[in-house]
Amino acid sequence: MTAMERIDLQELLVRIDERVKSIQDDIREINLARSCASHTEKIKTLERLVWGCLTVSTGLAARLVYLAIATS
View 1 (cartoon, helix red, strand yellow):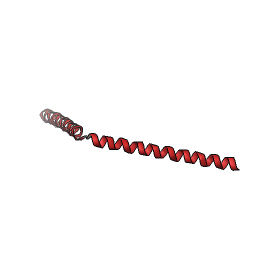
View 2 (cartoon, helix red, strand yellow):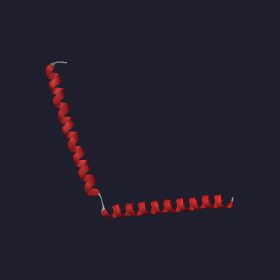
View 3 (cartoon, one colour):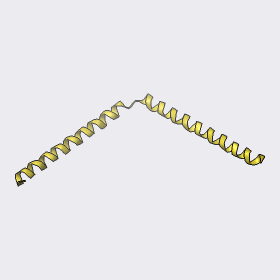
View 4 (cartoon, helix red, strand yellow):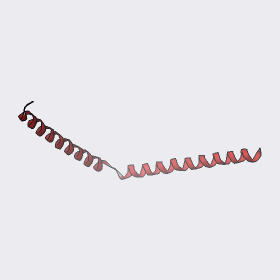
């Protein structure tokens, strides 16, 4: 490979890298624009429901273990 070919390849790689970065920035902007407040609120509500169910399940399991130990 000659020196000119290397320089051409390096320039090509730099241009490709710049283009990829600009595409990533565009995608980031699109994703930020697409975020919806109602979806965020729905996700928060679902998270609260999951944590509530997990807490209740843990409480019931602890009570069953306590009853099993207390009655034996």
